[in-house]
Image 1 (tube, one colour):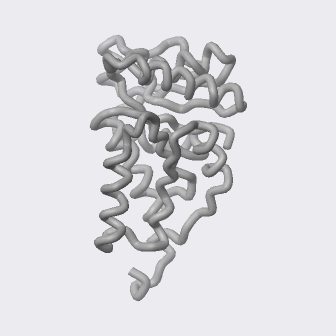
Image 2 (tube, rainbow, N blue to C red; image 1 turned 60 degrees about the vertical axis):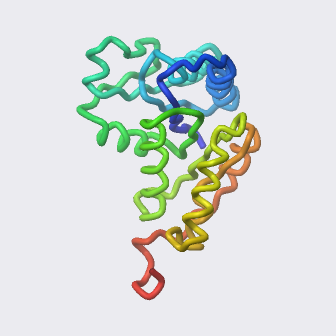
Image 3 (cartoon, rainbow, N blue to C red; image 1 turned 90 degrees about the vertical axis):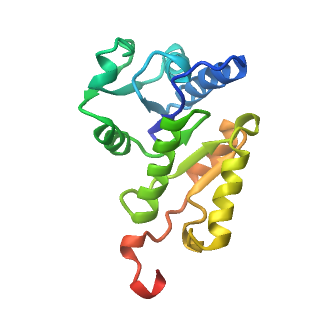
Length: 193
């Protein structure tokens, strides 16, 4: 994996562990020679991921929609900063520039990015690993909900391993490196659906 898209919040929670985690993720990826592709902002966890990676000598590619770039939240310290027309183009560029996805704590936008990466993998728009860093148990309920969707029958058995969840970056990256793509819906027969 040469580059990973990192999905996370643009907010700064009161609990300092979250910003520290984001800095550590950016630094950890840079130290492994993995470039960061992220939302292009300088605020919150987003900014902390970028700072961590840049401070460790890593590559950081920011992708920010015009509406946010115009509100002066762009991080001009990035190795590259791309301004795009909107969120759809932003997420497509994340996919085009990355070899996988890592989601750390965040809010609604982060969930949108995570679920689109999962959905696109399930369909066959990409075959890259989708990692979920469940630091501090932040995603326990989401992991349980994903399991419930599978148990009820809304996630096919062949697609139940798309989300790779681990509590540490090292363990997550190790599993992502050994990820074997599943059979996407686009390549399945109607009888398999």
